Length: 335
Image (cartoon, rainbow, N blue to C red):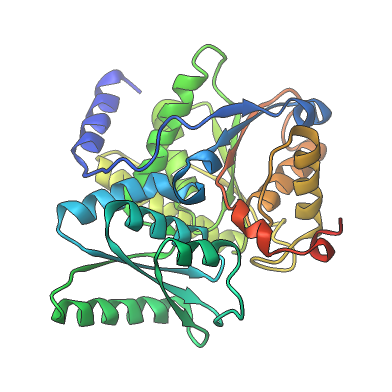
């Protein structure tokens, strides 16, 4: 792509409302021992080390979402997720940083004891609401109704969709690709980015980012929950919305694999457990069992199956989530 289109994209991004929440760039570290055992050049992009509210990938998205909220006079953030939602915890942290009220409408039963992410969300001052009897579509409707109630009280509430999946939020990961390319400018472009696939916005941003800043790099999204066709469709939807916002044609593609979900969302998979322990004991880096361990298990299996080439330069995007480990038992992790 010529410089003119990239400059035009940068100008569009610069025009978006954005509020800095974290210090960038995040570290890029080489996982020497695991990479050697797999015979690949394995780099880990440490978005788990962003700092605010225990870090994580949603903070890149929330910089744009909160920027818009502040610019448009919102005083309250509403969002949803599972009981151990990383996105919910990071939204609570962003709200606390900016002095905004925060309500988390979590899908599931109220826990007997707060642990992990939901404990941190409470510490950060979020108001917790539990919806045991509802799917996310119904929770979205309830949040919209709640925002209307708050408006009658003179407040203004912004409803943030599951996973921070807005066009502006997706742009956070378009910029993340430009960031990492500056970090490795002297070492050649990666062959592959590997990321956990949740709601799809992060993978969408990465794929648009590679289209712009590293066209020789492929993107693999390892599903943590959804079937391949569902996740692929959501990634495409987020990508189209962000491409329209940036005024570019969406030509990106993502390799989606749903073979590593295991027993189900938020449940420990055997391969994920092994991947978690392998990286921890080889390179001292912790993963979470819901997302990143499953993504790492996919990376390891696909290398061993020959679907990722020997000597490939692979970047694993660590999207955070390690507070979830503190909800697990030694029985679940078999240690």
